[in-house]
Image (cartoon, rainbow over the protein chains, first blue to last red):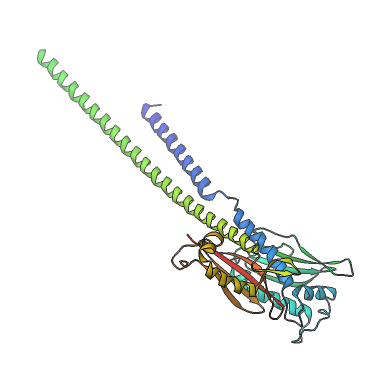
Length: 172
Length: 174
């Protein structure tokens, strides 16, 4: 090999090493997936507080019936739409569904979760979806919180499961 | 013979001069490339530093918002109670209204210790739509904030004994 060729090869090796270094730095600084603790906290807190708050909320159906009571009534008789008839003539299941949709539209829908998407599902025994609401692009998964909130349907030992999954529950 | 030798020596000197000039030119080009690379590296480093510092500020703002949220959660001034027991994530609307007046009276304490550089708004969504600004540090229009932290809460209305669905919005500014 001539001296000139060797020099060019050396130069190329240096350029390749520099390019690799640059790529490594760009990858580490800009694309490294950091553990976003605040985002995780915010998502977990949102799910927990949302469902707990929803259960306590006065439904406006009749008297001081809460949304939790409406859901339980609906889950006991899912095929007939529940036993409670609200002041406006709607049955418990229908009323709960529409009220929950209104609350979700006014809150999570406006809080920037469209890209992650989310699902709200209430599943009554034997396996009936009494409430279903979804929004946004469910293909992505943010926290993937799929632990259900359980409401016991006394006096039976069966439970109503309520899910609020940011990113989608993956049941469908 | 002597003339011939002199001519050869002159040619050799010219040839050496040319070689030296070439070497100097090469060194200058190498130095220029080196300084260009150095300048590029410095610009790149500065960009990375700016990017990371912006991220850091955002992270601090988010953490401050969470800290304020934790403080609000444990404020005995506004929490709902039944027979002395506190209901978690529930705030009494009448107590919130009373706290607004207290904040006006002790603005420096609440502004520096409880809600530093923040805007706290309590919004009722269902069944009533209502919004209460609990605290605004005063410069929120001119300042920069990250996406505000929102958390759902129950709002108890003792006037008609109902529990509203609401949320607290905490914006922290820099």
